[in-house]
Structures are given as C-alpha cells and as structure tokens.
Length: 165
Image 1 (cartoon, helix red, strand yellow):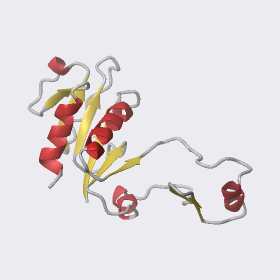
Image 2 (cartoon, helix red, strand yellow):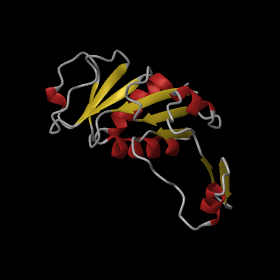
Image 3 (cartoon, one colour):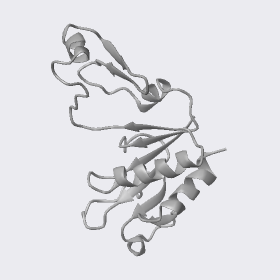
Image 4 (tube, one colour):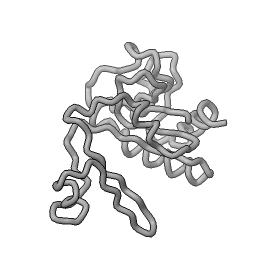
C-alpha cells in the first residue's frame, strides 16, 4: 500500500483538502484509507451505550457492527506512540493510505500551508515534502511543485501520477 501524508499546522486546511481529494479519488475507483492523527484525547463512544459499557468493564477491544459499517474501538497504552507503519498494518488492503498529521514521520507528504497563519514551513527541514498546497502559491519560492488549495484536480493528478499504479 502506498502511503502519502498531508502535513501542516492546525488550521492550515488539511482536513478540507483531504476530504475533497478522497472524494475525487474514490469517484475514480481508487480504494482509499485515511489515518488521522490528533493530539487531543478523543472518545468515539457515547457514555452509557453498550459498547462504552463494555470498555468500562475492561474490554481491550469492542467492535460495533451495523449492516453498513464496522467500528473497532481499541484501548491502547497511555502513550499511544506507535509508529505510523503499525497503524497502517492494521488496515485492510487498499490502493492508497492518506495520512493527516504525523508531520514528523519519514513518509512522503504534501505540505499544506495557510499563508495567514505565520507558521514556519516544513519543507526546508523535511526532505520528504514532495509538493506544497497553499492559499498563496506565488509566495512559495522553492523548487517543489506548488498547488493552490482550490486546485484539487491538480493535487489529485499529482497523487495519481506518483502514488498510484
């Protein structure tokens, strides 16, 4: 499975861009999985519901199965610092794994930049950045391919040419 990251600081537009890219790729028949990293403690279960009660009772894993979906809730050690490849191994086979976050992982990535945020660029220090997606392409002066954040078709073409068979 090919793995490509979407990296940038919070509020840069990663999720919005990724949502559009996933929609275009899947419409073209590409089987895509997404792994999103967050520094926040998110709970995917509702207190009082059966699956929540099972976790509270001590189950290390609870799988909720419906006619259309399956969700696995897994309790992990307090410091969930498993490497990205460990998470990728748990996915079903697919054509492409798109990763949001994990900006320090040694994977190819697209850097998503919001010029108004005033945050430092990742590309100068990270040789794995393969392209930049930004709201102000003329402000990016490096040799990497640069896309406007509204140029979803261009981003998808870049991904398709380099990361899909």
